[in-house]
Each structure stands twice: as C-alpha cells, then as structure tokens.
Length: 182
Length: 143
Image 1: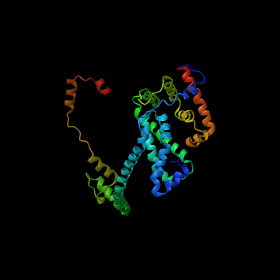
Image 2: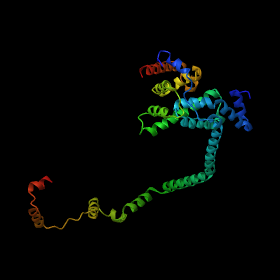
Image 3: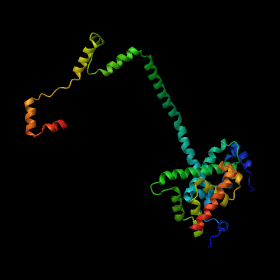
Image 4: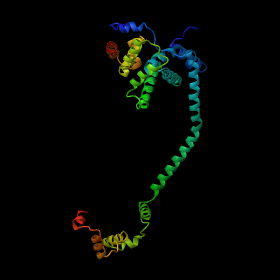
C-alpha cells in the first residue's frame, strides 16, 4: 500500500464511512515518531506508552475540529508535546515528596529502566540532556535526535526560528561541557 | 571512550539506547482503539445522565426563582416585623408597648432582661476567706 499524504488522509476523514480507516492511516504513519518524541521527554517506556496513547485518543476526538490552519504533522506533534509536558507537570506535583525535582526523578528512572540498553556514555548523554531546562531539552531532542527542520520546530513549539537556533546552540554547549566535566 | 569536541557527532552513530517491549508497535493500534472505546463509553454514560441532570438543574432553578420572587414581593414593613419576630424570642414586646415607653425606659427594660445576678456573699465571708488563704493586699491589687 503506498503511503497516503496528510491531505489525502484528511479528505478521507471527512467521509463518515472512512473516518476509522483514515484514523488507522494516521496511527500507522505517526505512531513511531510520536512515541519516540514523547519517550525522550518522559524517559520511561510505561509513561511514554500512556502519553502516546492519550495523544492519539485526543487526535481522534479533536480531528473533526481540525481546520487545516497548520499541517497535520505539526498539529499532531503539538498535541504530543503538550500531552508530554502536562504529564511531567502532573508528575511534579506527585513526586515532590521523594525527589527534589522532576529531572532527578527522570534521571533515577533512566538508570532503573529495563528498556534502556545504552552504553555508559549514552547514559551520561541522557543525564546531560536532563540537566537542560525543559524547553531547551525538547529543542535539543528534536534537532539532535530527530534532525527536524527549524521551521517545523518553530510551528510545533510556537517559537521563532532565531530563538530555536540560539536555544539549540546553548543546549549543545551545556551538554558538551557536562560530558567533558563528568 | 575519549571525550573530545566531536563527542555529540560520534554518539549520534551509536544508535537509539531506548528500547520497547517485543511487538509493542504491532499492538499499539489495538491498545489505542481499546482506550478510545473506554473514553467513548465514559462519555456516553454522561450523555445518558445528561437529561436527568438537566431536569434536576431546572427544578433547582425554579426553586431559586420562586425564593427570589417571594423575598421581593414582601413589603419592607412585613420584613421588619418578621425580623423582629425572629430576634425577640425571649422578650415579646409588642409595638404598642415599646411606643409608649421613652428611650431611657426601653434601655432600663432591656438591661433588666440581661441583668447578671450578683452572687449573694457576705462581706465578712470574703474577708474570712482572704485571711484563711493568706492572700495579701498586694496580690489582690496585682490581679
């Protein structure tokens, strides 16, 4: 089956009988990208699974109201990013008794995660990324791991390209410094 | 591994350190569908309750409106009388009785009602008690 474009998927979704088929196409096309995007933010597999599923449930519920003002890809990524950040905010409220910060909790999670098989230096890289402020962390992940274009990131994060470039530059410096000094 | 200037470039080639359970992405669609059904069931439960909630809300609204109308339809004099009736449970003075009295008389009457009964203790008994307990004059002044 050749891959449907986002525009074709949206056209299919408008037809009542093909709604579920169109949603199936969205799932097929974006599930991995969204899962990995979310996983890098929330770190643990179980949490990423939960957030990714919630993201697609939200997409299903909100798609009838999607007006096409932005690209489907951008819209989906924005929902996923918001869901992941909301999840972390809820976590912050719950974990404050055991950990001083959510970053400390995430570092602890990555060390004990059975679904993390990275080398020592990869673990160190993840810890360095977790030292970054929340927004800078997302920018770094999207650029470094996903190699996303700045204009796409700009639409998703609603931030200017210039600010994103500066943010990524600072993040790279901080990560390199962390790796050298630890 | 030596950490040099190009560490990030080198690390990029090491691949994804994160893993997922076996067949995770194959089962993902089914899990999402299951969650969607659960969410729709939950919202349909609310949809079923919606008419009953609307009826209950209508009754509450009607009751509130009725209360507001009856409150504003009573004249200020009637309100005053009913307020007096509510506050003067212990002293049932009629308007006539009160109007026939002067202000100082009213104060005396009311003061009589709230008068605290003085204890019936003899002065000598107090002095005896103070001597018995060895309480000096300076201690009394202190208190």
